[in-house]
Length: 82
Ligand SMILES: [Zn+2]
Image (cartoon, rainbow, N blue to C red; front, side, top):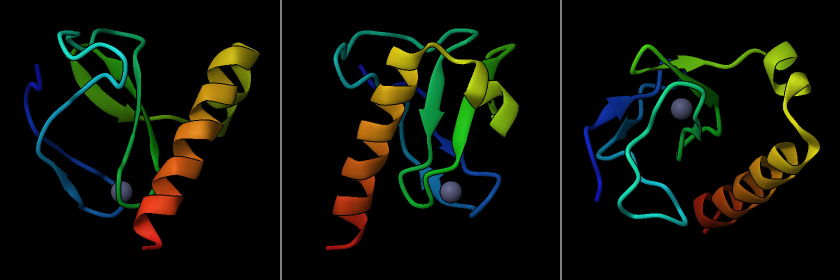
């Protein structure tokens, strides 16, 4: 179930919900990762708020997580470019 809306700090895009692509009932928690649907900026949930993720933080992620993010980013770019 989608939860609260949030706004990208980089481009100002307003996301109307937080959703998990493979679990509609999931509620975001600390350590979860998201990206802006408009610009692709990466975010990490800290203290129940989306905070921009640094390049160093991205580099420290497990390879499988990085691969998933790259796939989501490619899908995002495909949608945005239409
Ligand atoms: Zn953005």
